[in-house]
Structure formats: structure tokens, C-alpha cells
Length: 82
Image (tube, rainbow, N blue to C red; front, side, top):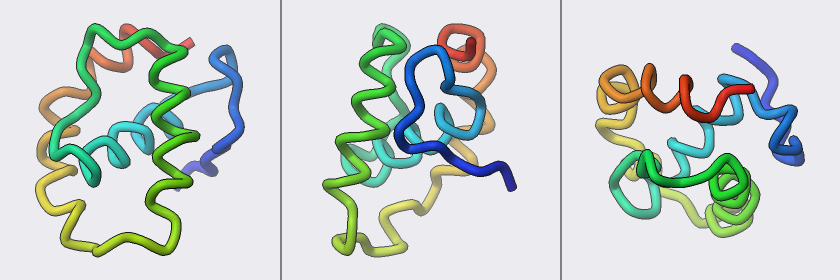
């Protein structure tokens, strides 16, 4: 498993950070990050939702994420991975 840098700049964000940001969005809103988000928006989700979920998370919030990620990751990585 790749190490996730929760303080990554937009230029430093890679697969691990983008996936984690999507996982956080899934836990909070029940969906992957919309394609219309900018890289800066994805970075904001990673950093902001990390704080929001800290010690306030039920593992069931992540149910279904891996399946959704597999279906939607290619287009998201193409758009946001540097």
C-alpha cells in the first residue's frame, strides 16, 4: 500500500492521494468526487475531509467504495494525476 501524503501539494498528488480523497468523499457524501472538480478542489477534499473524519468515522461509511472506485478511477486519474 502506498503512503498517503495528506499535505501533498497539487503537483505532488498521485494515485494514493486521489484515491484517498475519493474515499473521504464517499464516506461523507456517498459518491466519488465529481469529474468537474479541479485538482485544487481534490486537494481541498483530501485535507478538509481528513479533519472532518478524524475520530468521527464508522467503517460502514466506506461500504461500496472499492467497487465504485474501480469503475470510476481511470477517468479521475487521467484528469487529476500529475
